[in-house]
Image (cartoon, rainbow, N blue to C red; front, side):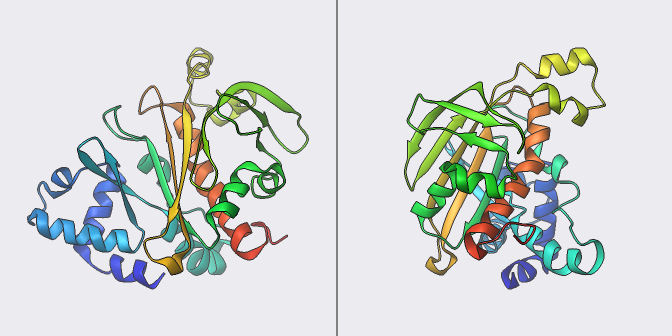
Length: 269
């Protein structure tokens, strides 16, 4: 957390974060435009932000695209704001705007990085074992044998049954990588989108996407393992599914981190 405070103390670095907040997934060239700094200086600032885990870079073809990573701000909010003011504050009130999107559709639409004190094997188990999943997802979530091509059943709430929503496992490499197709919007999600017509919602329900988890050693061994989640394949930057999952993934992975590191769920159980 000290690294995050130090990184945020510099106004040039805050400007870079503002740019990513306005439009996520930018190259070094794009971020450098109009700042009055050399690309080398911008690159050094980005390195500091990356070292504080406030920015993460993802290779996409020949480009390296930079994404705002809300994890440290989530932690600051929980420790320094939530405790004294609201009790429970989600990170970044404008997170939806931040993560809704890249302007071009050849970029990952949602990228999130967190560092967890766990082994790669234990983290993979937490992503695939229902007994783990139901604790940090509140009784919701996926179940599968996690073999490529196998169905992924989904439970919509602690009182619901597992349903086959036509999801399939794409990749499954224990301790390293997991990817599967995502379900479509369900009727129960209609209440989340009171700003759209029935026709628009029916159209949004046709959209498919996929989620990928990549587990790697952290750049600094003491940080544990690095988990990168990419949720992509959306039809447009205005995707209603993207709007729905962006906030959700932040809370889910925060709860996963708490469970693996402290052995408790977000509500202290």
